[in-house]
Amino acid sequence: MKTLTISDDKFLLIIQKPPTLVDFIQSANVREGSYAYRIVSHIWNSVFVESIDYAREYLLYYNKEYPAFSRYLKWNVKPLDGFGFDREAEAWGNILKSIDDEYSERICVYFCDRYPSILFGDDGQRILTSILTGCTS
Image 1 (cartoon, rainbow, N blue to C red):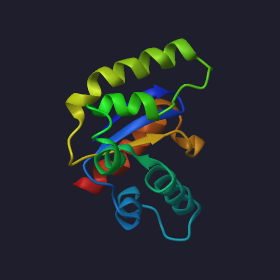
Image 2: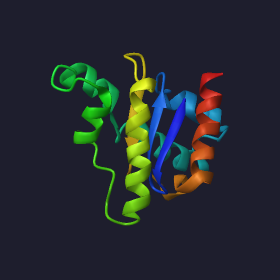
Image 3: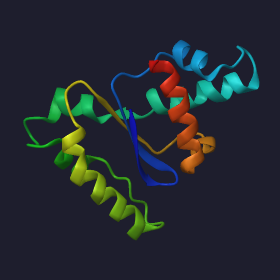
């Protein structure tokens, strides 16, 4: 599992297989019905239901049209919103340069740009990484 940061509120999540909600909740070690449970459920839903798995989309629909996964992402994922554009553009360019090495038919690649603010920045991605690591162990 790997997160590739574009900006404080946008990242790509590369993961072998998305966890189930039950596994995600258990890994976060929160009690059902609690406020923490609602937050963790919202995080899971935002990342794994509301975000698009671009690796799956590429494999199913676009691998004939685009010769490389990075080219598909370049034309179909629009991470730049104008704020901090230079920094975001540089990060996005670096991701596109390295993504073909990461890509295989056995991974999921989620572009996360609409998720709870608790995940913004490095601390948020550490929270997500910690929970996901617990799901896979």
